[in-house]
Length: 388
Image (cartoon, rainbow, N blue to C red; front, side, top):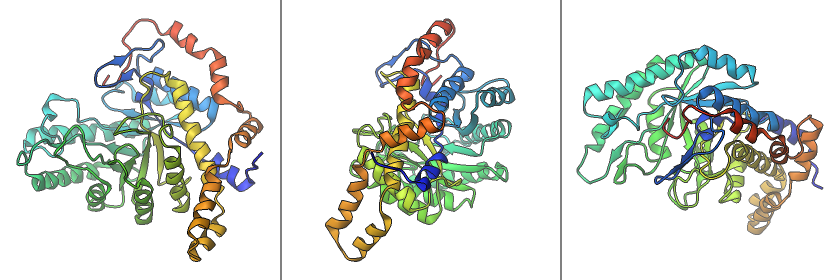
């Protein structure tokens, strides 16, 4: 069995992966959202489900909120509820993509009244952050155009910068703005923030409290995502990850399910660039569970990240550097592949048991009967779902 060194285990112990509240609601494709027994009916129950993931893995100490999906009357009470369950409230995600007014844009809109509405929504999110103790405001914009000539693309960039400046000015001293990008959808001719370069240009103009968010599903096929990770870490502007997996586009599937080697390569650059356990780089899942149960889906996800992190930490850096300096192409590749092919699961299981955690969190949760328990308890009311 592979042995993980004390140094590697120390680094793994510090790993934290934020869970998205919306992952515990009902979700599906663009054609159908499927209901599941036991689905949370409010943000309090979403947080309770997230706490179950952390209880079995010790990997998920924070929960991200999405506004207005997670609006409550008393955010201080929501914060206390989370803390009572052993987790904390994390990133606050804004939403300017489901309101009729935002059909042709929000922070980029040429109508000043609509743009003001979108800015004010973000200021409300910052007010919520003060109550929840959250550090990061994450912004993803479903804005752009579908046809050439439809919009003035430069004007939209100028208005976006002005809107972000107004939002940025409201941040507290310990708060950050994190700007996500996506190369297409729902706009297909041009997207206002389509790539890391555009996000970087926008946040660099704001200041030190503005960062880039990288979603692993938001790139064109064949994109070298680990190169982007390297570059943003090098520039000091990688604020957060949104981990998921994809086959074709923004599928939002369980991280590492489609291409575990890609996840390994990304985490290799995270380790190389000093991003692991770096307080300035937030790790988060951004995925939904369309046909599988939500809680075990999130458990599987954080374990996938942990396993690939362990493999990345196993790389013999001295040997790799020597091979690279000698232009030993196959030797260098072989060193990387040796780490990737190493089965770290038995060592991680043994380590979990030494910490009072189940060796196999998936099996332990399945045996707990918790899914049946919440299915019996959560009867009545309106189930939470994507967009609710």
